[in-house]
Every structure is written in C-alpha cells, then in structure tokens.
Length: 149
Length: 150
Image (cartoon, rainbow over all chains, first blue to last red):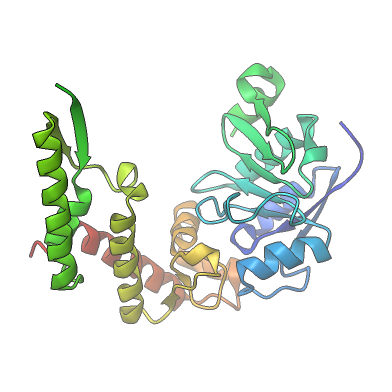
C-alpha cells in the first residue's frame, strides 16, 4: 500500500462522529468534512463537486448513490468522488469500504475519478481508460474485511 | 408468432393520475392504442405486465414524471421538505440541508432515536425536521400506492 495520503472531504450525509473517528484511524487518509472545508450544510451539488473538490484538492466521499452519477459528474473534470453504495451506511461499513479501497492497490486512481464501492466490488471510472474494477471475491483479504461488516 | 411485452405502467399511470391534464390523458391513450393495433396487425402476441416502481418502472419517463410531480406537490404540505435540482440531484431533502428524506430515515434506522439524529446535526437539524421527513415519506408512499384509486 502506498503511503501517500488520500485526502477526503466527507459529505454532509456521512457526517457522524463515529464514521469520522473510524476513518481517522486509517493511517493513509486525510479526512475533513465539507463543513470543515468551509462549505455550508446547504451547499449545492455543482459547487461542492465541480468547484469544491478542485479547490480543496479533496475527493468527495458521499453516500448519495442515487443522484451523484458518473453521467453528470464526468471523471477528470472534478477532484474525485467516492460513492458508498449502501442505503444505510454504518461507521463500520464506511470504514470497511474505504479500507478495501486503500488495500486494493488502486487508490491512486481515485483522485479526479469516480469511484463506486459496494459489497461485491469497487469500480473506478476514469475518463480516458477502461474502468478499474476490483472484485472482492477474487481477493480473499478484501472479502474478509467486507464480510466483517 | 413474435412475442413482445408492453410496459403498461405508463398507460395505467395516466388512467389513475389525478394530476395530468385530460388532453395529455387522451393523447397518450391514442398513442398506446395505435401502438397496440400496429403490433397486433403484425402478428405480435402481447403480454401486458405491470413493473414494480423500483425496477423497470424507474426507467419509464412518464412514470418518473408522475412520481416527481407527487414528490413536488407533497413539499407544499411539508414545509421543512423541499426539492431543488441542484441539491442532491433533486431528491426531496430537509430544506436548507444536504440531507435527503431517505438519509433521515436511514439515520433513524441506525440510531433508533430522533434525539440522537438531532444531536449529530445540531444546530442545523431539529426534531420538527426529522418528524416532517418521516411524515413526508409516509405520505409519499401512500400517495404513490393509492394514487387515484380512492
């Protein structure tokens, strides 16, 4: 695993002391919330994604799986988005999903790209090349982390 | 003989909708009638099915427009809930917060206590916001499922 930090900006829907505390135990992460980055609780999607991720040089971590879509927020035109694909994410689940991203060896692709993580795989959609897909079933160490949730 | 399945949700939604203009209703009825007659005249055996809203129906633009209209109209009855295309992609949310009605329900599921949610998001979120989100979700479900049948 690379030691370079992944700088995250946690969206309002995932602001929760337990989630933040767990994420901050992951050594190779730099975690700030949208509020800590200076945004309001009512900042709109385009400002946060198009402008915010680039200005703050952070990847937006959100649970908004329904409306933050790759078709709207084209990879490489923002600082990066990670979508936790679960309807009711718990601190343990968010921690596990981000941990598998860090351990997958693909975290370098997350910046400026669109990453979706669910219980079966992580998929990083880039602008110029084929998506990076990691199936957890093919990597027992990752599957083990996911199964603990 | 060829087989084709027709998505009837659009057809049915017009029949049941109280919100569409009569003109739209009849235009759609005629379009559907012509489509069906054309297919029948070409030997197509028709199987009409009624998709569940969260699967096939979600890709139907007419179905989506009906759902969005219901969601929007309910905001008039729930003052703390609003819809804005640039906020959470147009999902109904707590007015002035990046917190959808679904997010509030998910947090209630997790914490099992309104006060704990309020504690996490204080001072932005109040007990009234949470209760209004719950009421909105209930009204939305009921409106979708009994729409026009009373």
